[in-house]
Image (cartoon, rainbow, N blue to C red; front, side, top):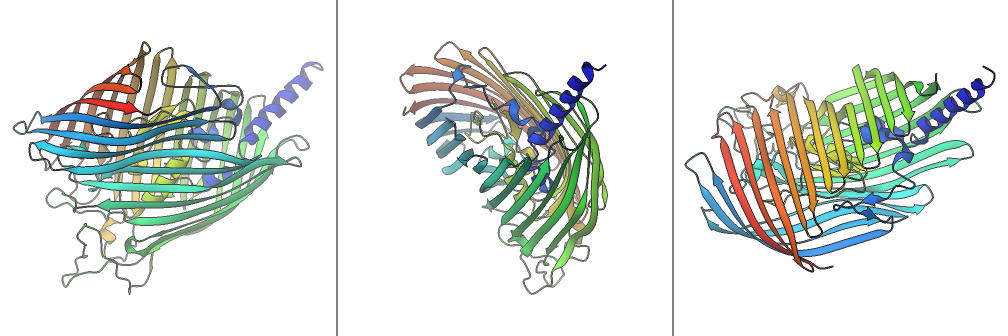
Length: 576
């Protein structure tokens, strides 16, 4: 006993140090909705050292990628697309695509970046489809200014449904009715460093989000439309200081933060602030008890919409409520007082971590948790359970911030738009929750999301799945009070498999399923599903030919169901 006790004690202390090593900026978790990568999310719960240090990244071909790799690939592309609705009298559409874009991956000692930007122009040929264009892109990056001080940024340009019926690829069939253009950007510094035996962390994030709708959404007869998000700015600031076990038999941390969002729609405002103290008590070599208590103040307010002579809210040409700027502000959510949570963390190694917590926030019981498992260099499993107050704008900013800085950007092979889930060497993330409903209302969200990524020789795999439940928060005495408490549910699944076929050919398969249950009066459930395959062959230097095929289905009460088959043949020239 005298010989093993010191070793056990050192094991406990080492375990506790690992627990607190990555918590310098965990104060950000207090603002985390289901889309965020902060705090209790699966990605943040991974040990900080699990993916830093000696592991080199791998590219799509499975080759070892240097930590000082810089790959920037501008390209031009031309393609011919044919789509045919296998139901509804078999409408056939054909069009030509002209595209220009750039894909980039940067991995140096001080910078990490993954980015893809694409402009596409479509020329309609048959079936009544008109000419159109679109820009899409995804960026996530980090640059180290000094030891422990980083600047992080992210951006997204994509499309979502304008009718509040979930995010899926079927919105682009035909002329793309019921679609909205979504733009999001965030940036800010983060700091995490050990100073004089204390773990010090701080950060700030600014986000801007915009949704553009060309025409009002088409809804089933008798359905009530939720308001459509327009634009917002959001600010998040947080800080923390703590100490690992050593001088004391437990670790501790005190933290605080402030968040504000101002939305143009109904002059909506979110304001939240908190302060709290947390302790970590190791009770064994691999297990620790977690506990925290603090104070929180959250207030959400908005103005009424303009109403006509019959008391019906007035909407503009895009289907949004018109704000009555002379009306007084009304509260849609207001809480302040004591918050607490308690739980347990199990971390048998740097590659495995499990956290489960129960607590009290928002005047209600909350449950959060995460699981991280990395059995080998190229395989990761992440699961997160979330409970928070969020919005379309704040959810997009948090979702972008939760993506890894190293992933292989992938797109829909037919329309070229960003896939909802992205995977890479650092894990992955899905934006389905953030994009599922472009509602203008704030909401309470409870969700779970799981990510699996792996590489084995020439093969690469990715799987993302989740569930999100949103309850809208609208003033009880508002002209649109019938939307208060409306609950939406979203189920989603995305999977991809890729294989390198020799030096100059690739084959990739992907599939998705999305089910959206809209709780608005008169609304109907929507389900969509699809699968696609892409074969690429490099002919000469930067010239690559591609052939793609997809099958996509869409079902919603009140509309004709669709089953659309598509095919694409294209050529791309990469300038590198």
